[in-house]
Amino acid sequence: MRTSPTFWNPERWLRRGLQLTVIAGIVFAALAPIDSQSQEGVLNLYSARHYQTDNALYDTFAKQTGIKVNRIELGDEPLLQRLKSEGTNSPADVVLLVDAARLWRAQIDGLFQPIQSKALDERIPANLRSNDGTWYGFSTRARAIVYDKARVKPTDVDTYEKLADPKLKGLVCTRSGSHPYMLSLIGAMIERNGEAKTEEWAKGMVANMARPPRGGDTDQIKGVASGECGVALTNTYYWLRLVRSDDPKDKEIVAKVGFVWPNQATSGTHINISGGGVAKNAPNKAHAVLFLEYLSSPQAQAYFANGNNEWPAVKGAKTDNPALAALGTPKFENLPVSTIGKNQIAAQRILDRVGYR
Picture 1 (cartoon, rainbow, N blue to C red):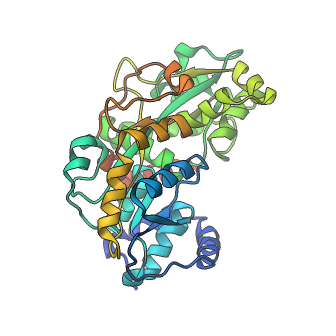
Picture 2 (picture 1 turned 90 degrees about the vertical axis):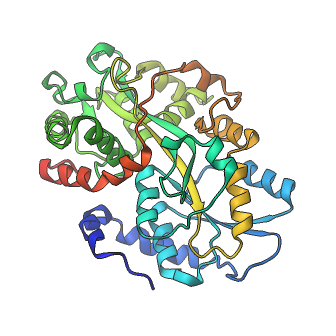
């Protein structure tokens, strides 16, 4: 079994509260073993993407290539733990993860192998992939701000930095600070503003909390609609799920909540990625590279946008999602996502110091 390098020890706090999830995930995954030996016409996919709309994505690849996709789906943490425990016997060919923080961790833990692909290098922008050819981003999502239309002015919440302003005391809601979505946002702020200013911001956020951080992004949006929160952070695809929903309750939520693109006059709205790479011990490497190239194809890029409300990573990819198009063309930050992932340890240290749970 491969052990993590000694310098990885500072990340222990990132696993806080995840042990039971990891154990449960490994037990569940063990019920669906995959033959580790190379098989003609087979691709073994380990995916932390849990979106039903991805089924069409994989089915189309199988139909076009004749390669059967064997899929294991787990949360990011259990998936990474399974890969580590399997070591050189792992049957995984491709590993898909959500968020640059997790992709960077997998890279540092040596769970990917570098590949050479002209198609991927030409299609995927440099800021949306690793600097060593081990992983690529295939879709992007943005970290937006939602607010209570009845209590909050949009001009008071149009930057991430303003969320720490004392005028918002008792109004701010977020998910756990240790969640990768938050760690990546804070990692981006560290890259832009430095650790000292980011820590001051984090202190202000803690002081402004309406309640202790909890729940997922949809819970934050619902908290704003219910009046529990005045303002919250959410990834855009959670918001668009509610916008596209036919459920009257969801329509009522959307009617009460305003949406803001943060930092349009400065650095741009923070974005993150869903991406993947070829597993370190892939028995079907050629199939794995072919699959990753397929994910960057026009057809697959459209699936990400139309099915799960994500932006294509490939510039100029055509989509057919009116709700996504209605959000316009905001200014996005242009930081390398690999750098954002690397900053997650510094981000967690800041959160620990200020008591941001």
